[in-house]
Image (tube, rainbow, N blue to C red; front, side, top):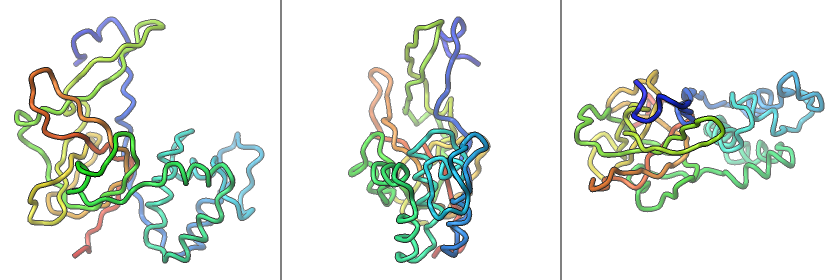
Length: 232
């Protein structure tokens, strides 16, 4: 169902791309082989196996087109299981543009309880915690801005966050005590309550309707996840 005011224009939903599961590589050689992939067919100046990971190759591995923040998030998630020495070698293999992206968009690793106090809107983060699906939407006042395009004019309107995403609360541990952070996922994703996960995404400013009480400063728009079934 289109929100009020959108029927005479085209609604562009930019933030609801399907999340991708990442299985971290356990060896440096496998990671580098997956990333040094030659890019897509139109990347004619990029060669596989030349010991340099270009921006195009990283984007292909991440499953994105031209999204440097998401490519860097994937890179960090994919090498999470490697030793610090192996991770340093992976970073050293990045080409000039990919390395510049890595420095610019390197995610901050935060506990869910610290997202509200130390996070920044637009910042890339990696969070590990225990999710709980937010069933009672009547108690959740979070909103988001979406662009509405009518002809050549783009305007923005505010809609409930749960109209676009499924909403989870993510806690530091299985006791699920506050503080926590808010996770927004695409509809196809299901996370079991108490099953630990690692999430990589971008913090977005949480909007609120007029006269509504602000409950959270941010929500995490997750791009990648890793299930941590054997975590303590």
